Length: 299
Ligand code: GH3
Ligand code: MG
Ligand code: MG
Ligand code: MG
Ligand code: MG
Image (tube, rainbow, N blue to C red):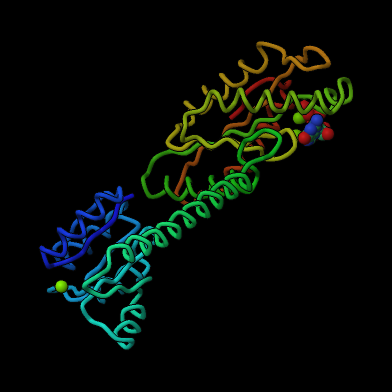
């Protein structure tokens, strides 16, 4: 684990570095507060810090305040290490944002156990962040297909649309609907229907670029958001999707199920275009594809 040592006194700094190196820490040294603040502004800043109070320019207190001002990406556990003793100084130091306070000359064993406590807190926080990210990801997915759920894909469309407005890049969407899916359920049962849904979703996902958004818009309807994709390219992609689904039947426990998709394509054509406009146009194109015989692409 990386640790920042912010200390203007070379002797103390070398002493600290020797101990920390022995305890397995990867030491990042700063010879004053400004250097320390530069280190802390990087996205890979150390999560533990030993900070001296009295340093030229930016002192330890000011460094603590800046580190707690909300501009750093992650939380860093700070041990303030200072020759200033007494309860009053301790209150000022911890009031500025330090997590712990140690006076010089410091006891090596005490520093080691206090660092261990800091490390526990940093590790616990990392576990919480990982768990929260996993929950957020899970909440954004459709449980049956693993695609983005309705809210997420509509949110993705809104974000990509405002991005494309700023960049002037085109944006296309595809609305895809499985043909006669009710009949699949009626004939093979809902479990086989679910297998078909998952297989179609997998085929779609497999054909997308990593930055395309694919979501389950509703029951057997899928919305695809294609950032930077022209009308022509979106139609070609929709056609490839159509072919990949209708070319081979889907293997289910109830037997092979022939499946096809109807697809509607819409492309953003002016800066006033809203997410709802694009969805409406894609829906209308999809409706034409159904009316014109299904298993086809319309724009
Ligand atoms: P069309 O070609 O006009 O789209 O006909 P369709 O039968 O596909 O369309 P319709 O809207 O009449 O029926 C959609 C069916 O999709 C009805 C519904 O039971 C089924 N469905 C929706 N969600 C699921 C699901 O999660 N699992 C299964 N097995 N079926 C679903
Ligand atoms: Mg000093
Ligand atoms: Mg439908
Ligand atoms: Mg359908
Ligand atoms: Mg229908």
